[in-house]
Length: 170
Image (cartoon, one colour):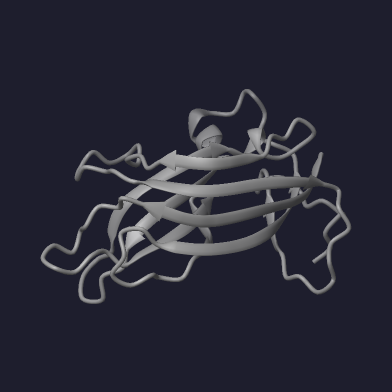
């Protein structure tokens, strides 16, 4: 059973693609996803190809990872992803790139802190427009901390198909 707090910090991005064309630049924001669902989102920075978000959020993590015998889709879903998008008020937002990390390498007894600058990649299901740029992130896991009563947390189950952990009562 893994229980703790995941601390995510989206710092900045550099050299983002200009999907708006002309003299204006992209209006980027980041969506943090887990199990394909949006769990956090930065503010949109207008007209900027090197935005600084300095956005932090925390999640309570509890549960068991899917078994090693689970299928590729389940293994893919246990990744935390950071997708960079260009906000467009009059059309569909444009994808600018993403990075993904297996959650098992970030949380648990053998957790590794992830900090650094990461090259943006294309989504696995897409092969359209070229991607370039990078994003600076920091991801840390605190095993069994005492939650701060003044901090709001969102709960992330490592395997949503399992029963809930008593550690975080709803």
